[in-house]
Image (tube, rainbow, N blue to C red):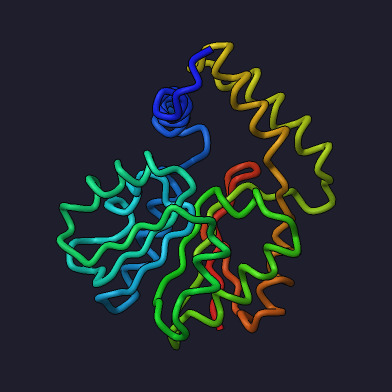
Length: 230
């Protein structure tokens, strides 16, 4: 077995790119919804992207000149190498950190960011860690700033075992563009790493942090986009 980290990254990243290109997780719809939301935000913005991956999504949700400062974090150094190249076109201040999102949040300056954005990353954390996420987001946000969350969420009344069974079943029967091995990769990741909450739980966590205005931007099966503000 090839254990070279760059080889592993390219292999798993290629699978995720197929997921994105086939829109299995509705990236297109949510990018459009987030872009529409941010059109109403006066720029230039200080933008914190938690779990940024290769940052390819940034060009789809913000316009040229809208961002003054971009800070992104991810646990994959190889993804960040790609992100640096993807962000060059914006000609803005860029800071990329190979660290976990909570560490980055805890060290972020107070009242500094206009937008804290996280896409398909928060569901990896425990509920206690998710609460810390919202608390630290509130601390680092400027007045009128917002948290934008795109993620998988449980249906109201659904528990994790039922979610895993249904989602993995959908991958098996509907994600036909992936090879059997790629579907197995995805299902293994879901079973080991997905710890989603219901929208109601997320609203409670946000409310506990002082983010009392919660608005759903879109919903597609278990995939949802929300905006949280003071």
